[in-house]
Image (cartoon, rainbow, N blue to C red; front, side):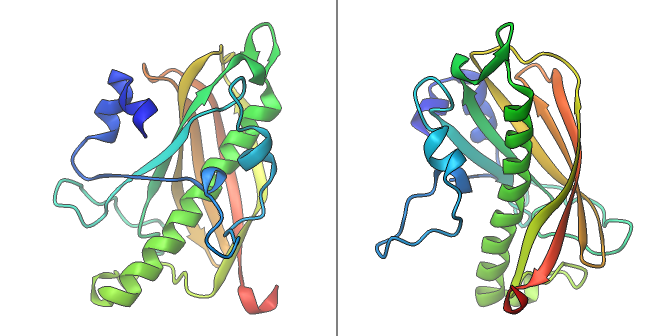
Length: 211
């Protein structure tokens, strides 16, 4: 958090009214019992170095903040409590694949991580609101209780070489929910809004008891 707050344009985004910063799944530390909500080793450990991605933070708009205008309902009627979430990532030259630009496979990994973080923060937020202010949950909100989700498809488009080092924003947003399928849109941008990649992703929900 301190690193990004030392960068003026990052601090502006993180300090906007209604914005809630959070630790993304890729940077969570084990609890007192050594447990983690994810078994991810690649992003949490291997990419966490000074020449790869040393700094990462997530943020979203509090859907109950008076400073935030809630998005319209999805076409299916179902929605997530948190419609969109952004990862702010400090990419270094160790992520390069060709000619000083980030590797395409790495960019796809960032996109998948952003989608997973949106699902993760919705699980946390839904559980918290369900326990304390259940009456606030709109009737058309996807019930996250006892549900697990996983990636089933990604259609990634590489739009422009992503030069490093630089801080990028990877934003995942809900497109629609159809039955057990959750469709997400993702964009990879820089501070000026230049789009480096986009993705149409699909996640599938399943009851945890069936895993």
